Image 1: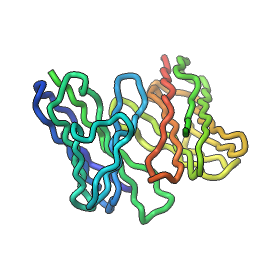
Image 2 (image 1 turned 90 degrees about the horizontal axis):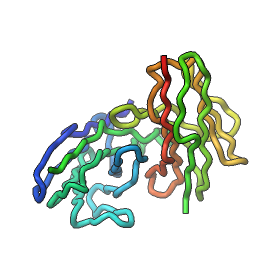
Image 3 (image 1 turned 180 degrees about the horizontal axis):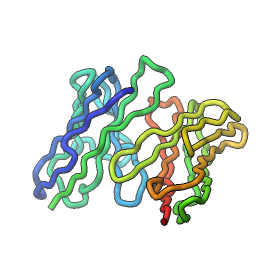
Image 4 (image 1 turned 90 degrees about the vertical axis):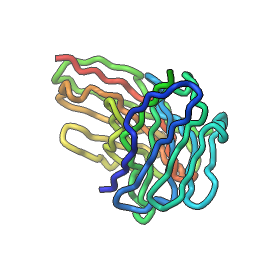
Length: 117
Length: 111
């Protein structure tokens, strides 16, 4: 089945630095990928929809200048957390679906646990 | 606004018990309802339901959808400690293919 690879699986960074997270679809092309964030004991919250070759669509309350999304190819989307602060510490998960298969479910990467010190 | 509500939010059972997890939804342009299991990492896919009344089954897990009453249940029979996880219900509403998730049910199966 469809596989989504996310890297790194965890990262610790200092406040004020930037962190890039990569999301790849391994055996299918994804014109659209989704970035979710999950705080402890809470559900997944959609941050943004990443569209190949165009600008991402951000959900209300998500700062587009802070969470930079680039979707330069059909198999790769990146999320950069710029000038990270401790409140950005969270579990970030990307997802994608194979749009050639109408009935395919959304598949998730393994997530990136970000800790900002 | 689309809404997905899961109940209970948490549950503790003994090994061997049967559990039923609930998910109700209000969405426009319903396309499908999905169940995921989340342990320490990202969610893993369990079931996708699109039609009412057709039970999907995988081992000890089964799920069914009622599109008239707008809910789904996930059943787990003969629970095992390995079933301990958060079970997420999500609805696909055709709005850009992103899923709308419920808050999840945290299940703990004790030996």
